[in-house]
Amino acid sequence: MINRVHTSASSQIELPLRPSPVELGPGIKKKNNIWRFWSYKAGGRIVTCYGPWEFENAKRLEEDRDVLAWCEQPLKIPKARKDGTAYVLDFWAYRSCGTQEYGEVKPESEMVESEDGNLEPADWAAVRKAVDRLGGKPVVVSDAYLDDMSYLLSNWDHIIGHVARAYYHDDRALRESILNLIAKRPPISLGEIESYHASSFGDDIRAQTFRLYQEGRVSAPLKDQPVDRCLRFRPTGD
Image (cartoon, rainbow, N blue to C red; front, side):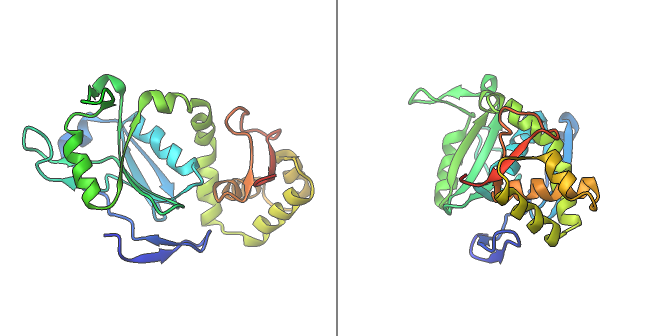
């Protein structure tokens, strides 16, 4: 599963082959609300999230520029639960440091207290052992953790579609022009970037700007400012 590599078009970094999503049973699909969106990080395809917290976590992975690749429902662990049924993890994520996370998204109200006093999903000990055997890192993401990122993730609702457009309409010349403009005139607002590139379609300008953000080539204060024409961009590290 993890011994092949492919090359990321945006970063030119070799990544492990992504796991393929596990096919879930019809019972799970029927009892959950479903969200779908297109993701480059997940392999340039439509991803499916079962339930609101999985969707919030998917946005977190899309926004986190340290996450180079991810996949939903990546691993099924047979007989991992005490009742003998299988355990399907919610996500796999590959970070720039080389860490491969295998994670579960769960409200704290549905967790149990472990022997060391931490909250974790039921049957997590068996999952942890299986992930350790794969050389991965087991991760639990709670609703409280995602709530702390609610403003940022709400902003990302407005950005997901733009980033997808940037890959469908891969205008490298426009993207490099925007990058050079941000480097010359930091901080510069999205409205100013649009005015400078008035000959281009507005949606394409926003798309390529937010693709630069997702790739980590520019920064913006999305944790505390709304996504509008006043949002200002700087070169990363500036």
